[in-house]
Length: 246
Image 1 (tube, rainbow, N blue to C red):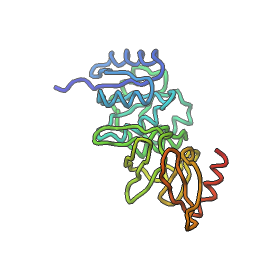
Image 2 (cartoon, rainbow, N blue to C red):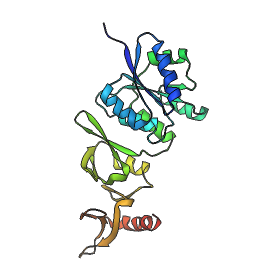
Image 3 (cartoon, one colour):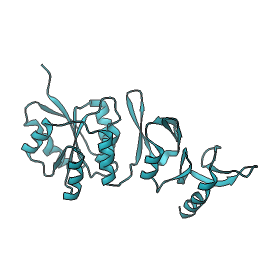
Image 4 (cartoon, helix red, strand yellow):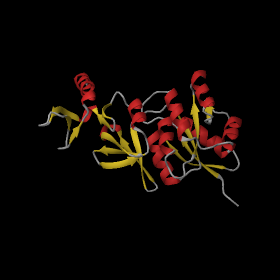
Protein backbone atom coordinates (compact mmCIF):
# COMPACT_ATOMS: atom_id res chain seq x y z
CA UNK A 1 0.00 0.00 0.00
CA UNK A 2 1.38 3.40 -0.95
CA UNK A 3 1.79 6.12 1.62
CA UNK A 4 0.15 9.54 1.77
CA UNK A 5 0.69 12.13 -0.96
CA UNK A 6 3.49 14.43 0.18
CA UNK A 7 3.08 18.22 0.05
CA UNK A 8 5.42 21.20 0.41
CA UNK A 9 3.79 24.44 1.61
CA UNK A 10 5.34 27.67 0.29
CA UNK A 11 4.27 31.10 1.57
CA UNK A 12 6.23 34.08 2.89
CA UNK A 13 3.77 34.53 5.78
CA UNK A 14 4.23 31.98 8.62
CA UNK A 15 0.56 32.17 9.75
CA UNK A 16 -0.57 31.34 6.20
CA UNK A 17 1.81 28.36 6.10
CA UNK A 18 0.61 27.08 9.47
CA UNK A 19 -3.03 27.36 8.40
CA UNK A 20 -2.38 25.34 5.24
CA UNK A 21 -0.44 22.70 7.15
CA UNK A 22 -3.34 22.39 9.61
CA UNK A 23 -5.82 22.01 6.75
CA UNK A 24 -3.66 19.37 5.06
CA UNK A 25 -3.23 17.38 8.27
CA UNK A 26 -7.02 17.15 8.54
CA UNK A 27 -7.30 15.55 5.08
CA UNK A 28 -6.83 11.77 4.83
CA UNK A 29 -4.21 10.60 2.36
CA UNK A 30 -2.07 13.77 2.39
CA UNK A 31 0.99 14.74 4.41
CA UNK A 32 2.66 18.17 4.71
CA UNK A 33 6.36 17.27 4.78
CA UNK A 34 7.88 20.75 4.76
CA UNK A 35 7.58 24.51 4.46
CA UNK A 36 9.41 27.29 2.62
CA UNK A 37 9.16 31.07 2.76
CA UNK A 38 10.19 32.05 -0.78
CA UNK A 39 10.74 30.60 -4.23
CA UNK A 40 14.44 29.86 -3.90
CA UNK A 41 13.90 28.09 -0.56
CA UNK A 42 11.09 26.12 -2.22
CA UNK A 43 13.43 24.86 -4.96
CA UNK A 44 15.95 23.73 -2.34
CA UNK A 45 13.19 22.04 -0.31
CA UNK A 46 11.91 20.18 -3.39
CA UNK A 47 15.45 18.96 -4.12
CA UNK A 48 15.86 17.56 -0.61
CA UNK A 49 12.33 16.34 0.13
CA UNK A 50 10.94 15.49 -3.34
CA UNK A 51 7.30 16.31 -2.54
CA UNK A 52 4.62 15.19 -4.97
CA UNK A 53 2.68 18.49 -4.72
CA UNK A 54 3.77 22.05 -3.98
CA UNK A 55 1.25 24.58 -2.65
CA UNK A 56 2.87 27.79 -3.89
CA UNK A 57 2.08 31.37 -2.97
CA UNK A 58 2.61 33.75 -5.89
CA UNK A 59 3.50 37.08 -4.34
CA UNK A 60 6.63 36.54 -2.29
CA UNK A 61 9.76 38.67 -1.81
CA UNK A 62 12.75 37.63 -3.85
CA UNK A 63 11.80 34.82 -6.20
CA UNK A 64 8.01 34.67 -6.61
CA UNK A 65 5.90 31.57 -7.06
CA UNK A 66 5.59 31.63 -10.84
CA UNK A 67 9.34 31.95 -11.35
CA UNK A 68 9.95 29.12 -8.87
CA UNK A 69 7.43 26.92 -10.69
CA UNK A 70 9.13 27.63 -14.03
CA UNK A 71 12.44 26.45 -12.59
CA UNK A 72 10.88 23.38 -10.98
CA UNK A 73 9.38 22.39 -14.34
CA UNK A 74 12.94 21.71 -15.54
CA UNK A 75 13.47 18.90 -13.03
CA UNK A 76 13.46 15.32 -14.38
CA UNK A 77 10.48 14.52 -12.13
CA UNK A 78 8.85 17.85 -11.21
CA UNK A 79 6.10 18.09 -8.59
CA UNK A 80 2.56 19.15 -9.31
CA UNK A 81 2.01 22.82 -8.43
CA UNK A 82 -1.07 24.50 -7.03
CA UNK A 83 -0.80 28.27 -6.75
CA UNK A 84 -2.37 30.10 -3.83
CA UNK A 85 -3.27 33.67 -4.71
CA UNK A 86 -5.19 36.75 -3.73
CA UNK A 87 -5.12 38.02 -7.33
CA UNK A 88 -8.01 39.86 -8.91
CA UNK A 89 -10.42 38.46 -11.49
CA UNK A 90 -8.24 39.47 -14.45
CA UNK A 91 -5.28 37.49 -13.16
CA UNK A 92 -7.46 34.52 -12.23
CA UNK A 93 -8.70 34.45 -15.81
CA UNK A 94 -5.12 33.89 -16.93
CA UNK A 95 -4.85 30.90 -14.58
CA UNK A 96 -8.09 29.43 -15.88
CA UNK A 97 -7.14 29.98 -19.52
CA UNK A 98 -3.87 28.09 -18.99
CA UNK A 99 -5.63 25.33 -16.98
CA UNK A 100 -3.19 25.82 -14.12
CA UNK A 101 -4.34 24.85 -10.63
CA UNK A 102 -4.90 27.67 -8.16
CA UNK A 103 -6.63 28.38 -4.87
CA UNK A 104 -7.99 31.77 -3.93
CA UNK A 105 -7.00 33.05 -0.48
CA UNK A 106 -8.18 32.53 2.18
CA UNK A 107 -8.00 28.84 1.30
CA UNK A 108 -11.02 26.78 2.35
CA UNK A 109 -10.78 23.11 3.33
CA UNK A 110 -13.19 21.84 0.68
CA UNK A 111 -11.49 23.77 -2.11
CA UNK A 112 -8.09 22.54 -0.92
CA UNK A 113 -9.25 18.92 -0.93
CA UNK A 114 -10.64 19.30 -4.46
CA UNK A 115 -7.45 20.94 -5.74
CA UNK A 116 -5.20 18.30 -4.20
CA UNK A 117 -7.25 15.49 -5.73
CA UNK A 118 -6.87 16.91 -9.24
CA UNK A 119 -3.33 18.29 -8.90
CA UNK A 120 -1.31 18.01 -12.11
CA UNK A 121 2.08 19.21 -13.25
CA UNK A 122 1.83 22.43 -15.25
CA UNK A 123 3.80 22.34 -18.49
CA UNK A 124 6.60 24.76 -19.30
CA UNK A 125 4.43 26.32 -21.99
CA UNK A 126 1.61 26.93 -19.49
CA UNK A 127 4.01 28.50 -16.99
CA UNK A 128 5.64 30.68 -19.64
CA UNK A 129 2.21 31.91 -20.79
CA UNK A 130 1.24 32.60 -17.19
CA UNK A 131 4.44 34.58 -16.67
CA UNK A 132 3.68 36.59 -19.83
CA UNK A 133 0.34 37.58 -18.31
CA UNK A 134 2.28 38.82 -15.30
CA UNK A 135 5.38 40.34 -16.93
CA UNK A 136 7.96 40.28 -14.12
CA UNK A 137 11.31 39.02 -15.46
CA UNK A 138 12.96 36.12 -13.67
CA UNK A 139 15.88 36.93 -11.42
CA UNK A 140 17.61 33.62 -12.14
CA UNK A 141 18.35 31.18 -14.92
CA UNK A 142 18.00 27.51 -14.01
CA UNK A 143 20.36 24.88 -15.40
CA UNK A 144 20.33 21.11 -15.10
CA UNK A 145 23.52 19.34 -14.08
CA UNK A 146 22.59 15.70 -14.11
CA UNK A 147 19.42 15.39 -12.05
CA UNK A 148 20.19 18.52 -10.03
CA UNK A 149 18.77 21.98 -10.63
CA UNK A 150 21.10 24.95 -10.13
CA UNK A 151 20.11 28.63 -10.09
CA UNK A 152 22.34 31.27 -11.66
CA UNK A 153 21.48 34.87 -10.71
CA UNK A 154 20.92 37.09 -13.75
CA UNK A 155 23.45 39.53 -12.31
CA UNK A 156 26.15 36.85 -12.66
CA UNK A 157 25.38 36.15 -16.34
CA UNK A 158 27.83 37.81 -18.73
CA UNK A 159 26.17 36.69 -21.97
CA UNK A 160 24.02 34.08 -23.66
CA UNK A 161 25.41 32.43 -26.81
CA UNK A 162 23.29 30.37 -29.20
CA UNK A 163 24.69 27.40 -31.11
CA UNK A 164 22.53 24.82 -32.89
CA UNK A 165 19.72 23.66 -30.56
CA UNK A 166 21.10 25.05 -27.31
CA UNK A 167 22.11 28.28 -25.62
CA UNK A 168 25.26 28.50 -23.50
CA UNK A 169 25.07 30.68 -20.40
CA UNK A 170 28.45 32.31 -19.80
CA UNK A 171 28.50 33.42 -16.17
CA UNK A 172 30.91 34.32 -13.40
CA UNK A 173 31.10 30.70 -12.27
CA UNK A 174 31.66 29.12 -15.69
CA UNK A 175 29.41 27.91 -18.52
CA UNK A 176 26.18 25.90 -18.68
CA UNK A 177 23.75 24.79 -21.38
CA UNK A 178 20.05 25.66 -21.28
CA UNK A 179 17.21 24.81 -23.65
CA UNK A 180 15.76 28.31 -23.97
CA UNK A 181 15.91 30.44 -27.10
CA UNK A 182 17.73 33.76 -27.39
CA UNK A 183 14.49 35.29 -28.68
CA UNK A 184 12.64 34.32 -25.48
CA UNK A 185 15.48 35.47 -23.25
CA UNK A 186 15.76 38.78 -25.10
CA UNK A 187 12.03 39.46 -24.81
CA UNK A 188 12.03 38.74 -21.07
CA UNK A 189 15.26 40.53 -20.16
CA UNK A 190 15.37 43.45 -22.60
CA UNK A 191 16.11 45.89 -19.79
CA UNK A 192 19.27 44.03 -18.74
CA UNK A 193 20.63 42.47 -21.94
CA UNK A 194 21.35 43.73 -25.43
CA UNK A 195 21.54 41.81 -28.71
CA UNK A 196 25.11 41.87 -30.06
CA UNK A 197 24.48 39.68 -33.12
CA UNK A 198 22.04 36.94 -34.09
CA UNK A 199 23.61 34.40 -31.73
CA UNK A 200 24.74 36.65 -28.88
CA UNK A 201 22.87 38.41 -26.06
CA UNK A 202 25.10 40.38 -23.69
CA UNK A 203 24.53 41.71 -20.17
CA UNK A 204 24.66 45.52 -20.20
CA UNK A 205 26.11 45.68 -16.68
CA UNK A 206 29.03 43.43 -17.68
CA UNK A 207 30.10 45.52 -20.68
CA UNK A 208 33.29 47.46 -19.95
CA UNK A 209 33.74 49.14 -23.33
CA UNK A 210 32.90 49.13 -27.02
CA UNK A 211 35.88 49.17 -29.38
CA UNK A 212 37.17 48.19 -32.83
CA UNK A 213 39.92 45.78 -33.81
CA UNK A 214 42.69 46.44 -36.36
CA UNK A 215 40.34 45.51 -39.18
CA UNK A 216 37.71 47.98 -37.94
CA UNK A 217 35.31 45.32 -36.67
CA UNK A 218 33.32 46.44 -33.61
CA UNK A 219 33.55 44.41 -30.42
CA UNK A 220 32.85 44.42 -26.70
CA UNK A 221 35.18 44.15 -23.74
CA UNK A 222 33.65 42.59 -20.63
CA UNK A 223 34.37 43.48 -17.02
CA UNK A 224 36.48 41.01 -15.05
CA UNK A 225 37.69 39.08 -18.11
CA UNK A 226 40.10 39.46 -21.01
CA UNK A 227 37.47 38.14 -23.41
CA UNK A 228 36.48 40.26 -26.39
CA UNK A 229 33.19 39.60 -28.17
CA UNK A 230 32.82 40.46 -31.85
CA UNK A 231 29.49 42.16 -32.57
CA UNK A 232 27.58 42.94 -35.75
CA UNK A 233 27.74 46.48 -37.09
CA UNK A 234 23.96 46.79 -37.25
CA UNK A 235 23.67 46.24 -33.49
CA UNK A 236 26.48 48.63 -32.52
CA UNK A 237 24.26 51.74 -32.39
CA UNK A 238 21.75 50.07 -30.07
CA UNK A 239 24.56 48.90 -27.79
CA UNK A 240 26.00 52.43 -27.63
CA UNK A 241 22.57 53.81 -26.77
CA UNK A 242 22.04 51.33 -23.96
CA UNK A 243 25.52 51.91 -22.56
CA UNK A 244 24.88 55.66 -22.41
CA UNK A 245 21.57 55.06 -20.61
CA UNK A 246 22.82 52.66 -17.93
